Amino acid sequence: MLLPWLLVPPLVLAAFWLLGSALNLWQSSWYGKAMATVKQRPIGMMFVGSSRVAAAVCDTCAEEILSKASGRKVHVLNVGLGYTTIQEHYLLLRDLWQAAPEHVKGCVVMMEAPCGVPPIATWQDSWVDPSHPELVGTVMHGDDLSRFWRSGTDLRAKLLVGVPVLLGVADLFALRSGFRQGFFQGGEQLLRTVGEKIFPGQPRDKKGSGDLIERGGIRADQEGIRMVRRLVRQQMERQSRERLDVKSLGDLWRRDLVLASLMELVHSWGGSFVLLAAPGGPAMDAECREQKEARDVLIPQVTARGAYFLDVHFPTTDEDFPDLIHLRGSRSADYTRSLINAWLSESRKSHTNTLSCE
Image (cartoon, rainbow, N blue to C red; front, side, top):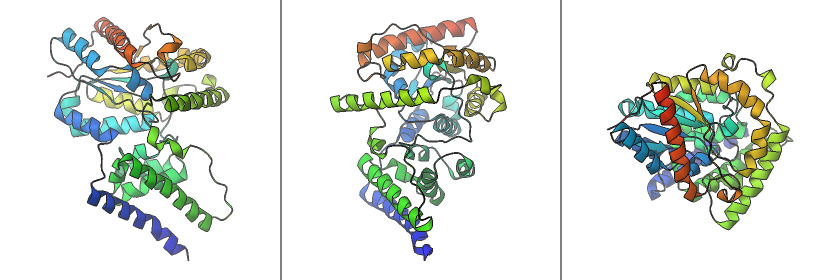
């Protein structure tokens, strides 16, 4: 009697897809906005990372400084978004390069390295933040499913993301936020029900918090700030328990690093790859002090393979981070000017001049 239960998920997916098409519920996703921009114009510099990058980098300020330095118009694209992973960043950049190679050629990619520590996730690790598994669905294709399925991603996330991609209805990941939240909450409940029918007595996975699907960006309201502060404290406590043991890593390049794939991709289009330590606020100060050993060990391994590292001296106060981790908007222009000027100085020293311009 399991057959009816196994048929339910594909039928539900088809119904959601048809409903979205009929009622025009699609919206431009993180992926869709970046793709539309790249197809329209050449991109000289791209910022990749979490919502800290989205908050700290002023696109227009960067464009103004770069254009003045190069004597030509330089376009900047900031694809920083909360709850994204380096696997998702790689898949996004891959698609942008394949869709408009003439507009990506020579593009400088600046990627966040929290506390100055390079991301060391491998392709065998989870591809998603447990709070937002749908984000990977916006950048995945059928060809990615085999490696995705072999990864350490949670089984429910694999099903919620993999089945729509397999069935060719990945437009579900561009549903307007309220419908997307309903779909994923319903999908989670459905998978739990099916799992209990097939595997009675199996413990439920408590990881993640589904109520964050609506909150992938930065919230400036007081309730949102209080929520983020609470989540940041919980995250810092968890990270202190799971601190990176750099001595056990050895040579990073012996691992199947996503970072290595990403650097190879950027270098293939003639671009420069830059790691940046974005301002993280008081919530990250103690963590960054603890991570100094990891930073000192790992950064040389990355720069030895053609990457750059920028850690801009940018004085801040606690008041510059209303929710403990995101730089106040009124300071983003100052930070961006410091960052871009530091890059221009570094690129002159290394004779690097790889900006796609009009």
